[in-house]
Image (cartoon, rainbow, N blue to C red):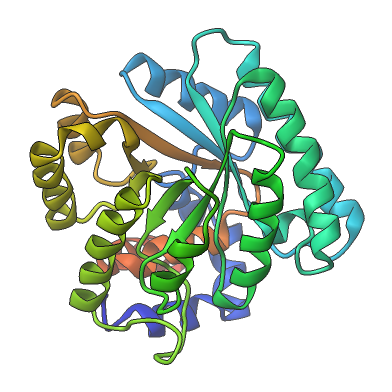
Length: 310
């Protein structure tokens, strides 16, 4: 993991920087590299384009940490609308990803589960997968509890696990039988006692978790852009062909399209994570922190716009 990741995330949380970034045309233009748009219509246009290129997709409405039950209900309503929109287009392989805090987890687990249940009922009718995203470490226990309860009633629901969290090596043994897991490295700023800090340690943890999840009978969505990890997964599948049906590659919209095309051309299932919505800034900062070159492009674009006469 980049040594600049922590400082980048802290700077990005500065109120002045956020205001400039979100209100300026340059900031919004850079965001469009990673975000499909601010409306469902814009996102669906991207989904259809990717489908035409042979990619499956997973749609995510950006937003987190709602403050009222009404906001949680509004988020769930937006997800049910997106599911109906997907359902209206036969043959479109598009799942949805939800953030628990967006559905009210920070207010109460019961509220989150109730709103998630509405989404899952709509998705079940449509035959669409729903993946529960994982957020900061403080919410992991509650998120896994919500997932287990939802999974007891619905088959088409999965959960995300973060390889850099030290606890994940234990969490994998407490999942419901035959779970679907989106395995990511982890993008939130966490202290050393909670999360691995060195890239090589995170990579090793990721590789171990991938093999362990398959050995336990789960399906794994390999959600990373790391070429070394991707090559390791491909080598594993070459020697364990029976596991191939339980593995899917997932990548973020706008990042490493060359790898997306390469994996698809080799016959692997590739699903592109397509975020949309007006609350794109927190998502964007995590993407910038993952690759400092992205941050430099972002800051230089803002600087040109703010420069007198720019």
